[in-house]
Figure 1 (cartoon, rainbow, N blue to C red):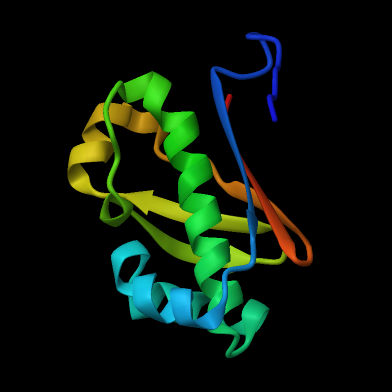
Figure 2: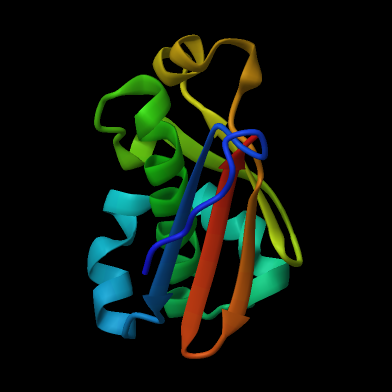
Length: 127
């Protein structure tokens, strides 16, 4: 899939679409992608569904990485961005000190998401 937008509408964008992973994969990889505090933030939205929680966090971070790479021109690790707030359709992330300094005052934009199970779609746009 490809996404395009006029440069006057955004500086950079990232999209990710993922199938909900199976529970075993979520359990095996969760600590690589996120920490328990991030899962707690999603509890009201995903309940105790670890596979959905994992997939939503993974998919959102992937969209952030895709949107941020053109701005910083380097690989971003999963632990450099952390989920700090969530509401239906929107996730808010914070960058660690190193990444935040590269992004200057703009910080990370919110990530919008949609669930069309078994798929999660996320979008991150720097305006």
